Length: 110
Image 1 (cartoon, rainbow, N blue to C red):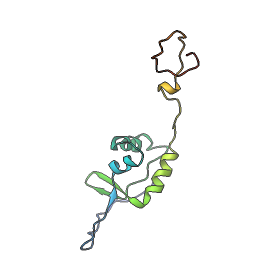
Image 2 (cartoon, rainbow, N blue to C red; image 1 turned 120 degrees about the vertical axis):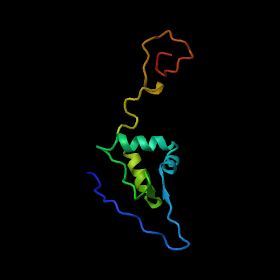
Image 3 (cartoon, one colour; image 1 turned 90 degrees about the horizontal axis):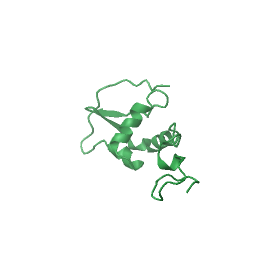
Image 4 (spheres, rainbow, N blue to C red; image 1 turned 135 degrees about the vertical axis):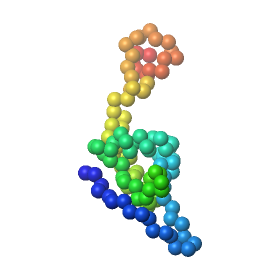
């Protein structure tokens, strides 16, 4: 289900008040990643597990209310494909029983 938000111009803040939002850089730090990973998540899962819609756009930069941190963490925990199929050494198998000890593959043939 896609969030059907409408866009409207933001209202000015009161004197002495500044609205703060988390951008993709800050959200990335919550998970130990940089902003490019968050951008990729937003594109990769747009159809089947959409990233929470931003609360504000400043130019082309999206921002989320910091109070939505738990919602975004829940989204990340439920992200499809986590740990599935990876091509990394920890999930690989090796058919070569005589490979060198420096081989990064961690299988039972060592």
